Image 1 (cartoon, rainbow, N blue to C red):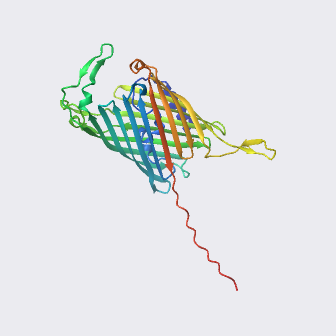
Image 2: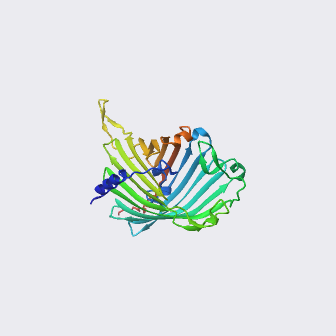
Image 3: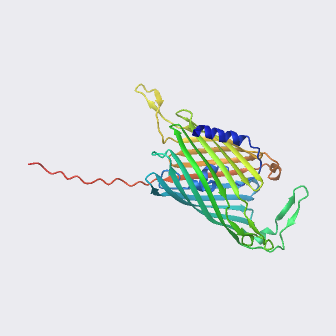
Length: 357
């Protein structure tokens, strides 16, 4: 079975799965590679890559929930001529109102195994590890409702008077695998799988409440993702992608289709008329498309790519019952990434010309 048929089969199986859940991942998951899968660490051509995303949940209702994220990675070491090692780090913070914040900091490494001489097909294995820290502001938190909440009556368990472990922290370990394949000049795919939260810890180190003393394991998060890029012609590009996640007994699926339009120039003929389109692999690309988080929200996506720079915007429009809770406000995201390319200039040996006699 070739890679194209394998990718088609995977997409078919994915669309047949009935899934629904609410998750906190980024809508532009492809613009946050290290939080999606540690195997993406250093999986690019260049010296270093920096990027980040800011997500604001229900922006029309104030500072309810926002998530800033940053990352940096680089391919640092060539191995066996065609393979290489990448390292990087990522940070993101989930902020719930003014009283609860959860900060994630991870260091990642990935080994990229070239499956052919020209590195058109690469299998990557990655791991990441770091800390998760929670901080609770007891002053503002006394105004919150904690535990089971009934929106019809407003009844819930208040948190005033409870004893807190503040700040709480835990160790977090993740792993992933990724296949990137250049099928031909016009088509490439990437498909990957990652597992998050592999480390078992004592809940007394992670719980906000001191009376929770049982040993627990942070729920394992499984992520399955893929992207297919194809040049429809000189100017148009199509990029369908998917993300499926499962944590505990909750599933979530996202499907997206983006179109890209290359801003190519046309040759100018002697008579002043425009001729054929000029090929330019570094021409700017305008991207736009739609997505759907199954059973929850519609997504509108916009982007702009120019050389090593990418920027994207996304808006989630809530379609589920949560629309009543957030007054129809969805989520807004802005993300960007830039690949730094620093190449050494070749050293040319001086040529000494000796006169002939």
